[in-house]
Image (cartoon, rainbow, N blue to C red; front, side):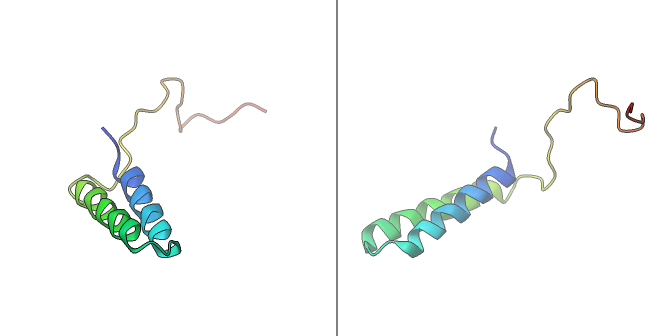
Length: 64
């Protein structure tokens, strides 16, 4: 499943492209797709739930 941050970033990029085009049909389609991505992202949790590597322990000092 795609995360909230990813979907939000993609929606933002689509809106940016929509603002730069002079083709009103393309702009409308990009805005519609951005709205779809935003509606998919809204119910997702804000925090990143990706798994961390098993060898990472934030409490251990790094060796120098």
